[in-house]
Structure formats: C-alpha cells, structure tokens
Picture 1: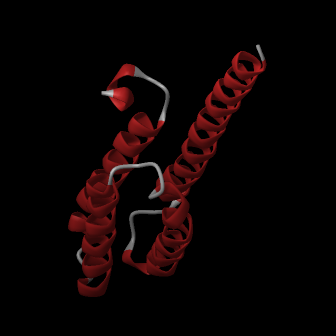
Picture 2: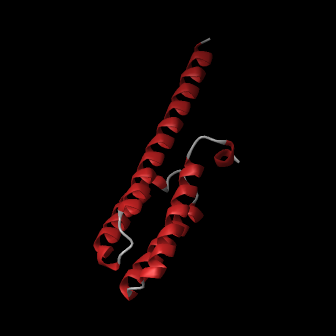
Length: 120
C-alpha cells in the first residue's frame, strides 16, 4: 500500500513540475516576443535589440533543459542575422529578420506548451 501512495505522490509531483516548467518557459518567451514587437523597426534601436538578445541568452540556459536543441539553435541564428543586419544598417531587412525571429519564438512557445504537438 505504501508503494502505491508513493507512486501517486511522484506522479503528482512530476505533473506539477512539468506544468510549472511549461508556464515559466511560455512566460519568458512571451516577454521576449512582446519586447521585440514594441521595439521600433529602426537601425537606431540596435541597442534595444542587443539587450533583448542578451536577455534571451540568459533564459536560454533554462529553456534548453527541456526544449529541442534545434529550435534553440534556430533562434540563435535568427538573433545572429538580426545583429548582422543592425551592423550593416539595412532597415528593410530588419523588418524581415525581426518577423522571422518572432515566428521562431512563437514556434518555440508552442512546443514548450502542453499539447499534442509538443508530446509527439
């Protein structure tokens, strides 16, 4: 009987931790997306974009514990492309790169949630 009780406790704890992890990751990604959307599509806002990138690098360590490495690498690539565009100063390409980065983050947010896509 004791082993059944411990099994239920462990399952409950595991489900709770998975839900908590999903909520934390979704919140952090939502914050990054929100900051990106609020940042103007201007080369003069390069410091803001670089701050967002630095903040994502800080939370990436936590996200990478439970999210596929390919998805994290895609976002890193998008940030690298955005940094290059800011260095060159091409405002038209900035809009495109920013859009791709937001889409990659939205994909990561979908995968980190509790749904059939993230399980399979």
